[in-house]
Image 1 (cartoon, helix red, strand yellow):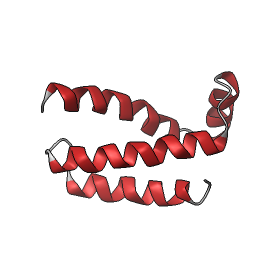
Image 2 (tube, rainbow, N blue to C red; image 1 turned 135 degrees about the horizontal axis):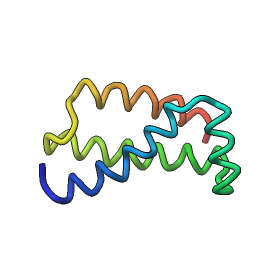
Image 3 (cartoon, rainbow, N blue to C red; image 1 turned 45 degrees about the horizontal axis):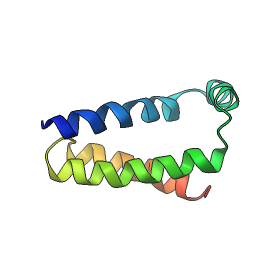
Image 4 (cartoon, rainbow, N blue to C red; image 1 turned 180 degrees about the vertical axis):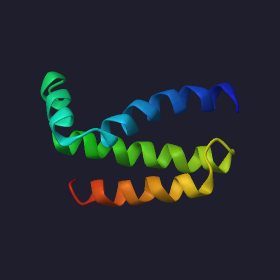
Length: 79
């Protein structure tokens, strides 16, 4: 994995952890950081585009990318 991929993977992973959290935890984090739902959804869409490029470079497995695309689709419905 390239140093560039390492950087973006570290950036994407906390966002995925947020998405995997229970709703009360997401609401608490969003309130603490003053982040609206639409802003989080936009970050997910951006992360998805990054993950697609990282998959092309071998940083993500194609199956993982499919899961991310499903998450992106759900979040895209919010924006």
